Length: 578
Image (cartoon, rainbow, N blue to C red; front, side, top):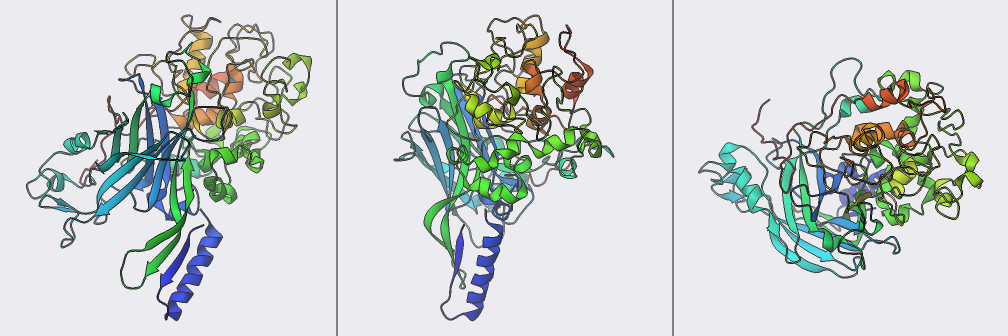
């Protein structure tokens, strides 16, 4: 919690204001796309999205993108958005499951100056107000010590319009030139861009928050983030830098567990802010307090209930993994209530194609509050599998009534191991607990919510006809149905490098996560939908087709992404019209 003081010893009004602000903040407490009450009042420190993917044009590197400041209006002057001072923006990397906490931390801090405080314009005659620069520090010992690797890093100004950027009375350049000049190399080998960008997220916010009207049943869907900007921190890092200590320089396979990393981002502020009654800048002091964090998309927004959102934002993933009070929202997510006709499914017609397995293989119920696979706990059927208590069973089958402990909880909390039953149904001969086609290994169980990426998985070319924004869901379909990939042998399947094995800019994460809540991961490993009769040859039933063909109504970004770093699209100009 951040405490605010007023500098005026003789002001009774000031003391009353202090009391009011203190009470307000105590009630509201502190987290992404305005997903938690307190952070919605602090947009400069608000994480919106995190991406981590193997760079398509430079596959020996990983690109990590952390975006901040939601729903920036391109024409939101005269005080345009910028990275905030007195905020620590950090990107965290975990690469070793044997150690608790981060191994690598990138810390960005920003400075702002007004080059010409005599004008109300943001840019005039070659000078820039609210001009940002940054310092980048890197820690390779888990945050104990930091080395400065970039100083005075350039940040492009807001893309105000052609007169401000291109004309002689402005900066006399182009915005693409500003972006190019802001791409810098650090002394430790990373390539970095910090600056405005088109918001790469796409979703019908209006529909989804209108009680799940996604896709809209009463009119066309609309990308609620279209034509908005964010502020991007993008960093391209050699894979060799991100590898755990002792990992081989070349992966043993495309599922090498030594190549798994976890990525998350955060923003922190100092605990005390002192305001002035004389127009001076506020003074920040005290300990650094994490006020926002993000790993997996939509976790705090659509999984954690409103009463716990600020609490979730205050935790690190390493604290979250042991904070079991939040697990219930993954074992039985609220969205599952609206994908079940026995509960409230009929009240949300937009999600009618998304129906959870209530009688998979005529044996297993994954409905809200049901037991899932818990009836197998301790049985010989799970011996030697990931569900065995001697393996990961204590995590994956913790108790009755925790229906989604075997799929949604590990997807968000540990990643998925290349261990039975977490292999594709190809080769299982109808038994989901048998060995199948190796498919994914991004298992990193020492932290909670992070993006987990296996850096050994090859890149899917963005121009490949098989490239799909459905990521792992599409890879599973190919691995189950396409003769080129539907063999028990290990080989690369297109889009194995997609969400939730990392996250590419193009990935349709809203659709993938809704399909996941609807049980698509369970179906992929052989726990088919209820209209499949155990023993039938063809598991591609109407229910499965309905889940796979479901659409939210918004399936791509409003601008094409770039083919080279920093990949995000150029921000919208304040003067652009539709």
